[in-house]
Every structure is written in structure tokens, then in C-alpha cells.
Image (cartoon, rainbow, N blue to C red):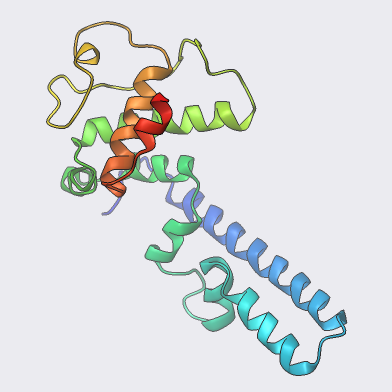
Length: 189
């Protein structure tokens, strides 16, 4: 088993199926628009091929008939941060969680907590809510002994319930995926 018994696998499959169907509908509408354009047949064909490759959710069903849903590696590109957080939490094997977290220089419990926190922060921002000086309802678990650059005062006990801890989390993750990033420096200035 890849997922805990309580994990709603059908929900994940339904989410992906809906995304793939919506992508195909959008692609078909674009093809109809291209067909109505004044471009010649060769240009129309080129435009349609380009549009079909814009996302995995479009490319897979326009290229393959079986299986109905795109492969897992392609699905990951289509999931929201919330979907990814839910998927990570639902993994049955701790060794899988640890392997994923290790790629980002984290322990699995930190990864799960950080994904949950970042999903919440993303949703707050998406609704244009105030972040500055806001006390967070979902507080991320913080490292008790960091093996990576981390502000020492965040290792000390305390509520750490404001955006600073989340910015430190983002800075750490940015450095894991792009080691030469200057994101933290730009944020500071």
C-alpha cells in the first residue's frame, strides 16, 4: 500500500480526472478558436500542436488513450500545494516521507508541518488577507536543532506565531531548490 487506509485516494483520482477533463475542454475551445482564425491550414495545425503541449493535463490525453489518467510524475505538475500536502500526509511508509523530506534537507515531521503551514499561508495570500503582524492559526513545527542555516532565536522555545518563521521556511526551501538564490537577501532589503 502506498497510502494510509484513511487516505481518500478516490478524491485524489477525481481531482486529477477533473483537472484533465477541464484541460481538454479548454484545449478544444482553443482549437475551435484557431479554426475560426484566418491563418492557413499549416499555421492552424502548428498552433494546435503547440497548445496541446502547454500542460501535461492537455498533452497526455491528446497523445495517449490508455490508461485514462496521466502518469504520476505528470500528475504532480497539476496538483495544488494543498493537494501535495494532502498527498504527502497520506503516504503510508515513513521511509517514503523521509526520502522526500531528505531531498529538501528536512526531517519528515518538519516537511509535513511546513507543507500544511505553507498551504494555509498561500490561501491567506490568495484571498488578499493581511499577513504583516498577523498571528498564525497554523503554526509550523520548527527545528529543535537545525543542521542548516536557521535563525538561532527560532530554536528557542516560544510561540513563533508570526510570519517571520514562515519566511525562514521559504528561505530554506528556496536554497534547497536553487542553492544560489538571493531571495533571502532581496527580502531583507
